[in-house]
Length: 387
Image 1: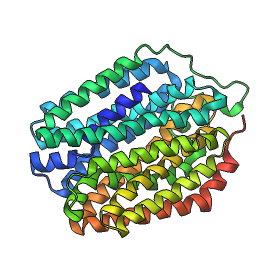
Image 2 (image 1 turned 90 degrees about the vertical axis):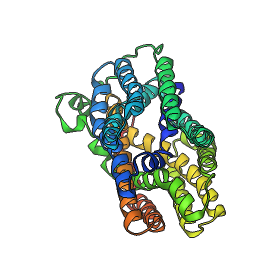
Image 3 (image 1 turned 30 degrees about the vertical axis):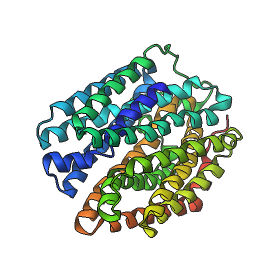
């Protein structure tokens, strides 16, 4: 959890301010900003299936340490990027170790949690993401307003990523779980180039459903600061917005822990999708301070219920020696959604308006929610593996 906190703290230090950095430093247009930022997500997406394969095939501790080192060292590249092209190259390449690291770290976390408390444990593990999401954007925006120095943020991200790597290094090497007595499990472990070594085909609809939710968050997290400034006239509220988002995430994780412990995954997922839909609708229907801040809290409550439920659901559809693949499959779908959201958000805001972009988000969230109730629930119930 400590390493995961450092990982996402370093990530969220830069996320809300990078669009402003590209505009101010390189005079980039809105659609160019979308293209530059989507490169990170694209390489993270490409790395996901291979990282799932690696953590299911090789010693997970070694894979974790290599991924963490690469994630750490790339922050130094931002400091030396003197042109838009060079920055784009560094940012794009940085997505690969990030994508691999999130898979490796979460898979190791699943290994160390007792199987009887896995649903609940994954929920608590996610708190480290939420705390980082609460603190990092607030710190970043405060430091930027105080110093107007982006290099300071790059240095801070580099140091925090290094501390995360140090925190995880004492972790003992754990044996990779192997499923015995299962034909499906043994087949899944044979043949290094089998498709199901890179993508959990049994969970394809869960992954497709998550694309819609990732799309919405991709637009929201990357264009929130510019939208609030240009449309709402809110110049200093982005840090507070992320703080309320994280408060909702933490509260929902704690409140939903009992339901997860009792295996009520569908209940948590259903509540999360509905609450998130209300959040995005509130954001566009009430373009004022009330709608702005209320949407943050509601989105936190919704995602805090939805994410651990979907993660446990797809893990329940995988054998023990496919945990890395299951994790990477869900994260792949999230990355696909975020990447599409960044691109579509930049295009729509450039040629129409930011308001149109966020109406697109509300429609995408409602579509994902309807898909969950119409098909995904039944798909999971029929496809989960009884232990």
